[in-house]
Amino acid sequence: MKIAILSRSPRCYSTRRLREAAVRRGHEAKVFDTLKFTMSLEKEEPDLHYRGRRLRHYDAIIPRIGASITFYGLAVVRQFEQMGVFAANTSVGIAISRDKLRSMQVLSKHDIGMPATCFVRDSQDVMSAIDRIGGVPVILKLLEGTQGVGVILAESHKVAEAIIQTLHHANQNVLIQKFVKESQGCDIRAFVIGDRVVAAMRRRAAKGEFRSNVHRGGSVENVVLPDEYVRTAVRAAQIMGLAIAGVDMLESDEGPKVMEVNSSPGLEGIEKATGIDVAGEVISNIEERVLFPDVDLKQRLRLAAGYGVAEFTVHHLPELTGVALRDSHLAERNIQVLSIDRGNQMIPNPKGDDTIAEGDKLLCYGELSQLRALMPSPMPPKRRKAKKKAVNGK
Image 1 (tube, rainbow, N blue to C red):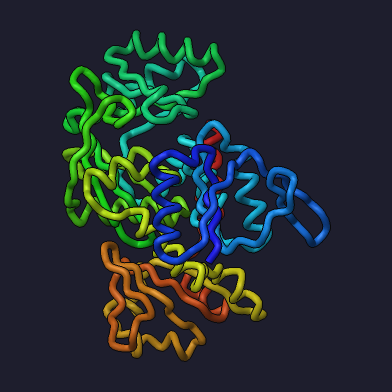
Image 2 (tube, rainbow, N blue to C red):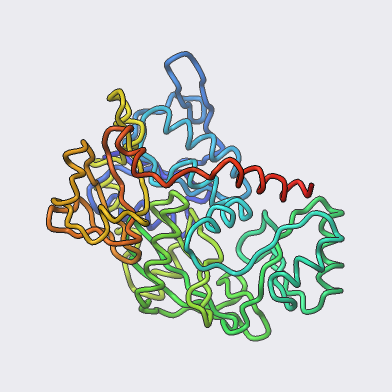
């Protein structure tokens, strides 16, 4: 297999390790400077040139896109995708993870622990936003910051307000986030590949510093994660659409709190802390996924007229609750259950003796008319109008 590693730093630890791991497993691997690509956009023939020469075919790419070149780097990854080349992380997943606000918005829809966060633009809303998340001290984060740069601890309302006003005047966007005091200057970095955490470390801030980033002088140690932290890390990466991710979590009294999901996590700290060949795990995952690429079921299966894919929660459905799959009569209604999501348990390709429980999420393929009958009823018109009236304040 031919693998292209997109990186502006061919000598950095992570890039070197990925290339070494690929070569050791019998692949041809080459590092390309992301900014040296030229994209050709023509009818039915998207193409790439590198340093003026047309790029040969590659089977897969590993994007190591730095924050400073996100826009152009994403364009290059998209071009590879349009050419049918497999990407270890997709352009969409990278784009979501790079935008701190967007990534928090995406996570907030799901049952994922995260520090209470606010985003404001009007300086008059700063005080109420801080009170809404539990008061000072608070963490202020620049949306464009990386490696701990642009992360500020504000210990009073006045300091927070002054900092935010100053940054707003400089056209900088700022997140206001609850300070998790019990984490005591530590956080967890879980390295997620596919559906598992292959390595994890605890990062501890240097004396007098609240940021635990290694680049800020923090120390690292190997850690074995409780199941709750493993599930949270894997789920957060999946929600972001990332197959390879570094998930940063705080250890709070309420359980894991996701701070960030990194699409280009460094390898040096975690490999040295854990002794695990993380680079080799990345290449192994790519080998498997190139052979068995992801399939968008909703796009593929809708080719059959009148059929589709839907997910619904079993709620107040006595004909399904507590019933074995074979006795649910779903098959007779041309509905195939592809998986059952039961909170901490996933049942893929469930069998006839698997029982459906209240609260289960069923992913199904079948006739749209039959699937529609299982969907929760839409909001009544009167309620919609009332809700709209409340939002408009009339």
